[in-house]
Length: 145
Image 1: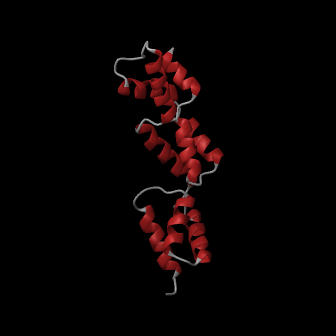
Image 2 (image 1 turned 135 degrees about the vertical axis):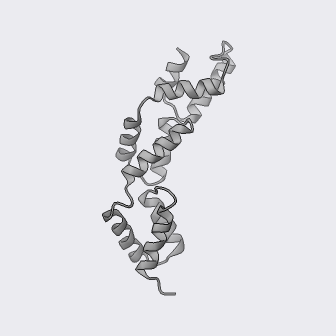
Image 3 (image 1 turned 30 degrees about the vertical axis):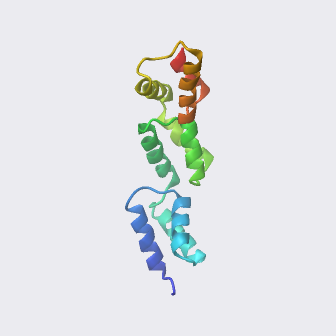
């Protein structure tokens, strides 16, 4: 079957109509469906030219969504990098979002209603919970001090 540029472009619009995607995500999805890498690259370029894909905008949306779910900046940064977003773009979106210490407190208080434990083992579990959520040492310490 001969792949048409219009077909690839329409598929990319279909993908983008559901949510924001990074450039790499679109590339991966189109590569699974279509074999002509030159046409895929042209489509990606056209999407970028028309500002339909924008990794900075994607990062802002992604950070906001993950933050609402209670994840910290380290985890979000790692996820953005795995989605092909440049580190400086990811770091900008994360730093613009801010208020990470407050989020660490909210996430902690939601999970541990009784507050910081006096028991050393339980306190270590509480800290590990925040580490696994992707909060930095400074953010975690702000909860325990």
